[in-house]
Image 1 (cartoon, rainbow, N blue to C red):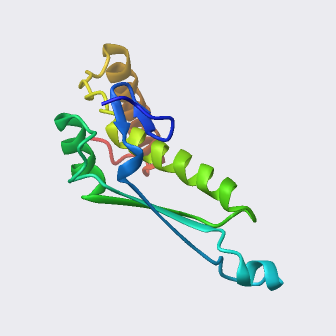
Image 2 (tube, one colour):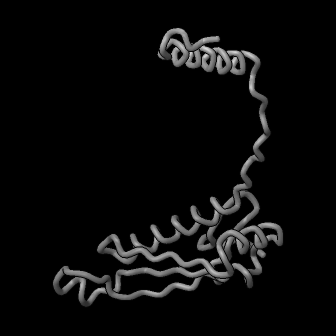
Image 3 (spheres, rainbow, N blue to C red):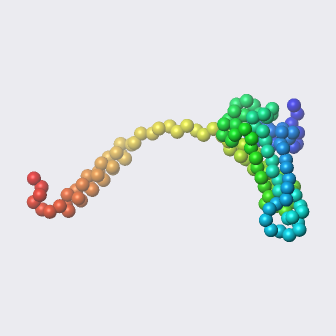
Length: 140
């Protein structure tokens, strides 16, 4: 399967075929006069991750687990449908790439000897301060 210019590259080895991107358009909401009321500049793009044939199986499993079976991006920020389309493509690729990132596992660390010593010294100083506040003659 040859990659087309309209395919959506997500990460190394992960490309969503253009045929699997479902686009829909509508008027942007809110004020704006005749242009906003008549021009269909709002862009919505959907991708069926669970049924995507262009994704390797490990990537598909990770994306479905993190994002669900379908991903939807809606953009209506610009007055131009073409600019909103390019923003939607970029945001979709960004969201999918972020979901594919595997976080490094946390390696437990030990408290250093110096930190342990400083903590105990601070406790001793605090106890001494409180002991000095007591009435004299109560120490036995």
